[in-house]
Image (cartoon, rainbow, N blue to C red; front, side, top):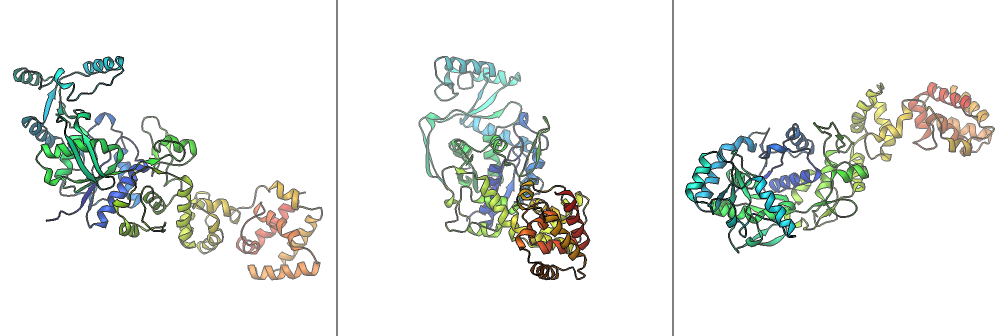
Length: 507
């Protein structure tokens, strides 16, 4: 009987969730939904020394903002919990004991200081020390000590770790759903620590046990875990649960925009773009890291951009709703090599989603920014304003930059425009136009334009000579939407007042 697809996103709460982590969660989510399966969130907090307060809550909020809501997991319930590893502590010991009893693992009593000495000695020989099948028989462990001594050390409470006993010269072969056939020789692998005397498992044991107990069918994770794949396969085998082993897939790295290496927060700081989904304040230093949400990106733009980092739909389509991503997603179309991040493309995606919104939708998003500035506009009028400037924007915050003059008079005027367009007779012409505007009773853009055009024809004035100075008076610069629409929206009184102000201030 075919098993129901179950995948998990299993981050460690050691800091904010990197966009690479969000992409891993996204690909897991898409795969689960494509196959009618379940998406789980498991918090892997076995390394208590690296635990960062607030990180777990940050991970959950990030997933919610991105629309990647787990079917089960920390904060979401489920029948196979608890989903936080620190709360599963009692269940790992029996699996570690089973490995010991069946000869697949052993106790090691070497102290951190002793191992450090071995490393230093190896460095002096220009070598690298590894606790493995080549060295373990010369170290302090249950393979070299008598059963009585091992028992005495354990009973006395001496610190120990349980290490996996890597078999000799074994070829571990498997089919990665992204990379195809992968092969590892155990002679090149070390004896990883699986369990510590404080009762906490390491990532390797906890990961395998939890995936087994939570009935995970597919493990989709970053390529940094590829070297761990043979150990995990051997653990399933050694624990006698191979028939329930998941299929493995290892995602490519997200590379920095320029140069070599994977994308980091440092790259974002240096080049001026975020790498985290939500704002993060370091609880120790108080440092604040910028984010996609707070920088004004729409979650759908962020997700669309991430989906195409390392995956191709096999078509020319670039814009996808979540449903379309689910429908199109196929692990075999994930590339093996790293995917280079382009900050400009992220903005391009956001611009697309902003342009897809109606003026009314954008007005509702823009309104809180205006309220913060003490501005409470008429909503119908605001929608009209947004519709006029929307095309010039990438982010909602750009609406203020492109349309601030609808809400407040200019405090300064563009010097280059003044020098180029403000002629000796400009004040006189603007005064005549100001007087004309005061006589217009039906203050609508069409009417204003019609009366103004007739006036210009009568005076035999060149439109270009006065249009730029009028715009300068109304908005402070030489560009913007239709001039007569601006006049209507700011009102007759304000239009005349701004023209008079410019006449008195610009000489």
